[in-house]
Length: 175
Length: 62
Image (cartoon, rainbow over all chains, first blue to last red; front, side, top):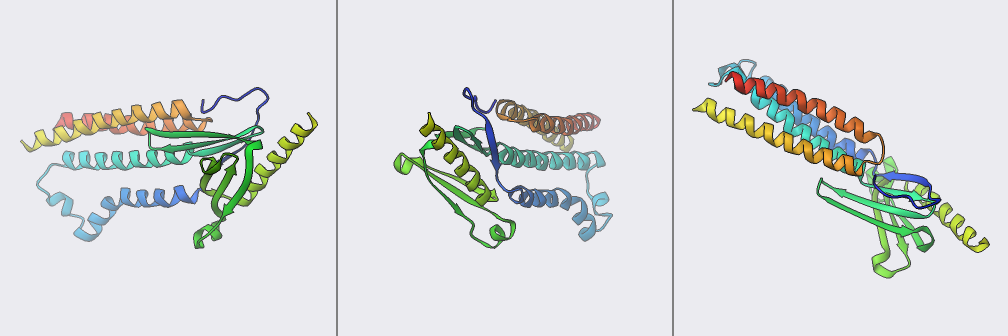
């Protein structure tokens, strides 16, 4: 399990990077994957492979190794994208940074410690596809700044976190 | 001699793919928050199994 819920804690929102950040490199990898199988016959001729001084088995071995390497890169990309997230609960926000298989950073801050939420949508693609950064400042100075980059609809996420903050503060006042 | 080199390449690829798959399984089993992890490991496992089986067959025919 990625985190242990506290008593009464409910997950409100799971935020990941925009799908475009996954789709663009994925498309590139797919092109790289199929390029040798289409470009070699297209540019060097259909008989080029047959003219090589190696057996067909060797060519198939290299083709499979090529597919395996690109496939592993695709899986790495997908793992990075899917396991990199913000989990917003009714009590706290959990910031998970996944980088490859061996690097993982998990930070947590309490909702009631939030002081300021800033969103930043800058650039052509960001504006077109409505994704950007969200920065949350918490009580605790410079170390209390949390940034989630390239998330979809940062304005809606900001409003959702603000709603949770208001709810938490109201609950604290009444209790 | 050349066949021996290609057999070596094939075996290195198989060992690397198995180690890589184990690392991937370790990461997803530890950190997957939802059922997507099961689907990911299933698809990955299937592709790697087919690739490794084919490679094993091919390097034995060299």
